[in-house]
Length: 156
Image (tube, rainbow, N blue to C red; front, side):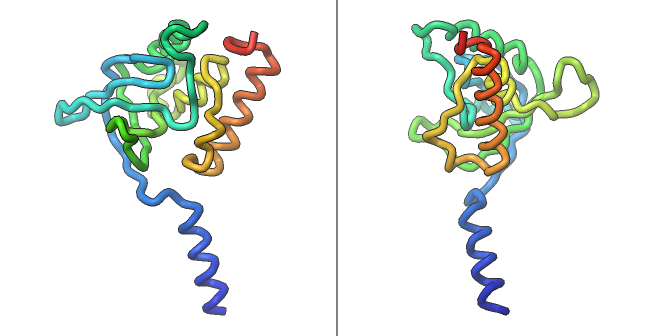
């Protein structure tokens, strides 16, 4: 009995992120459809790269539309960032949650990465799927497939 409990605990730890941190901030600017700058409560700037998605680069079609869509969702709003690591550029890689425009008082219930996927303004970054929690991975994969089926945004 003890051995199977130990194995189950070991499997759970292998599937969970090594360290999950949470950051409260205000979205100060949006630089790309998958990158934004947050200002923390102690006035530090943090560059956030949205985990699990990839939007068009600056010179690619839909780049400005993807950036503007993310700005419409998040710019100027308070946000909660759930993250586990920084990349080699020092950016936080995480999921950014804000209050939806159509639900004042709901709190940070909108995952902006998922909204970017649903609108066709980003692709699910499947090559980084192992860095996502399982539920997030499946939700992002679903949102991209739905956007493709509707021929939304990038998928026109």
